[in-house]
Image 1 (cartoon, rainbow, N blue to C red):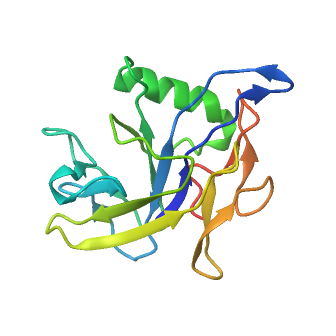
Image 2: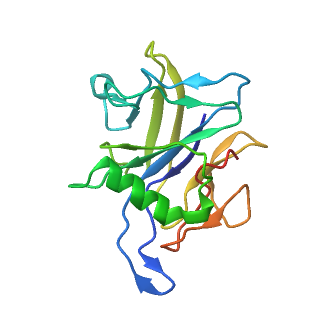
Length: 178
């Protein structure tokens, strides 16, 4: 299940200007079985079927989402590497990010802050989950409400694991299965 998406991060930290225009999304496992993400693909609303991106790069080791667990995917910035993206993400969220949460980088697509969608496809190309989201509120992720099953709730500090980032004024709950 897609449980979080941030498409417009904050441009401030305690009153100072910062540059951090990075998208991320989170997948969570509400089943009783671990899920192997090998062969899974994703796309945004601009991508057609032939342009579905693999969640895991070719030849990458398998990544499993454990029952009750989550995995976070963060977009590499232009000119940056996957390792740089992961280090920036971990610094960005600091103690908000559960230490055992897998965080993986992807090169594209970026998600529009003016409204977009995210779709996840299984290895058999069957649609597993899709969410559409409206224009973003800068500095707040869209999250999943486990009580209602609704996606698109804005994250807020103290609600369903929402917390304040370490290096910006962003609010989200990366790695917290809401």
